[in-house]
Image (cartoon, rainbow over all chains, first blue to last red; front, side, top):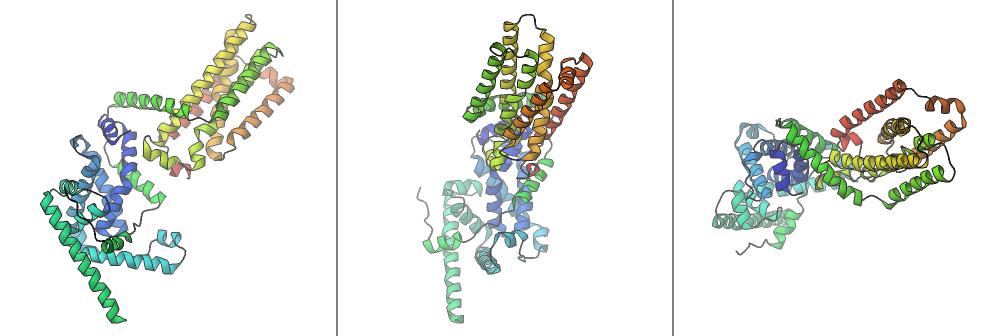
Length: 186
Length: 256
């Protein structure tokens, strides 16, 4: 059953199809938002809100649009709204070990290593303006074409290209600087 | 359109950005929360019609995926029934009573197999949700069992036209509704690959004891309409409970 068929059923009032659609794309939305925010709890909340928005507005979906792109557009817009909100400004940026981390890892050192690496990437991505970060995430992690990113981010193809180029340059500089600092401290 | 290539160094750096996914229980809670927040449309008839169509369509697909042992076992039951009636000339009422729930019990393994194999989540993300999958398999096994019972009833009447049709009907309706309902109840809580074999053995032993004990045999064969209706009603109630349970079927409720 395709996404389109599921959506048609949802529009007809079939509750079970909602569950299938959410389940099918939960991880896609979650991973996109996680890389945008780097915070597990926040990502869970934003994922939930994105899907609630999706299901409430499913009648607005046009079959001509790619569903995944449409869904990621919703997720992206929702994340942007959050970043502009007061809640975001008030939130403390701390990284805590989760029970899942503790359960799933063999050694505490590997948890810290992985979390340190995540923190590092998160910091590197946070150095970028959100529109550049979003373009890189969609291109790299969601394997989207430039034209698809343009649809999701509501911008033109040349703009996306320039955002990607600039973002990747900045990331490279950040990485290079990090390595230099490390060498200097050693 | 020329796509931008990502530098291997950056690619390696981004590759190590792993996702801290929520665990299964957290994800289930999250999905339940999402669904609870969405207002449901009240197109009950349309919804029921589409659900029924989906289940019937999926039943055909599920039927083709049933293991050959299910069909082989049922052929044995059918063969055993035919032989008992024609060659060994056993009591047709008792034969029907003993055979009636067997196809269903044998099919329980097929109905619940993905839970035993831990594949429910995978199946649910593909096309149908858990309750549609279980309902489709129940439909296949239930209809097939009904067909076998009807075939043996017809054979009984063919062998001995003097048999009372209503009594024949009651002989298999009670175990078909009540025993299969109880068996499914036990299977839902057993969560074992051996569930069908265990329940079939229990049923064989029960039938053997019943045939050997004149009191129970007499009790079952002399059931009046009121008592029979009470047994069938009990079976129907058990199945209503099952249907409600199946409608809210998810991974967590199955403890997977």
